[in-house]
Amino acid sequence: MVERDYVMRLIHEMIRALLKLVLHIDWREEEKDGTVQTVADSDLNQRYQKLKNLVEEKKINEAENLLYEYLDELDQDENRAFGLALLFYDLLTGLSDEYLEESGYTREEVTEGVTAAASRYGYERFAQELMEGDWDK
Image (tube, rainbow, N blue to C red; front, top):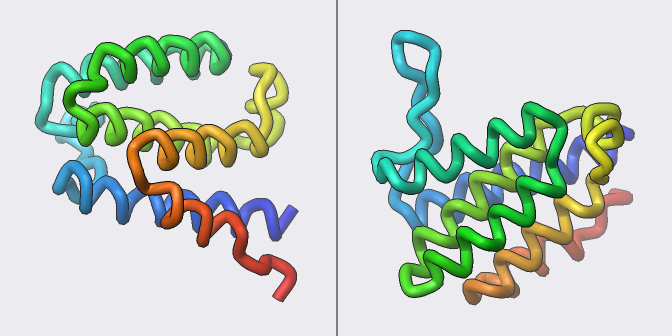
């Protein structure tokens, strides 16, 4: 369990670094009313909010399918598409094992999703180095 949490924290930090490099954003900033403006790009923010709503309804697989539809639509703007994928998978890294299980999803699927998105947008080596780390030390 501790190892799994450590890996999820590493994935979270990798996502934050990639978001800074790809979208030039310093993660999420909470507004005064408690809402989160994920990115200044209102289109991406709307798409992210739809994905987040599905996750909150424990429809993670449905949200992931919608994510891939969005990625296909945004494919001409790879940085925005990759950023949306990163935001989505980072949202999942913060969920408990129980929540994921109740939603029909696993930690392994989160890791696979991040790796697939990184591969799709040319960041495979970066993700691969992290995923292949020796976590037993």
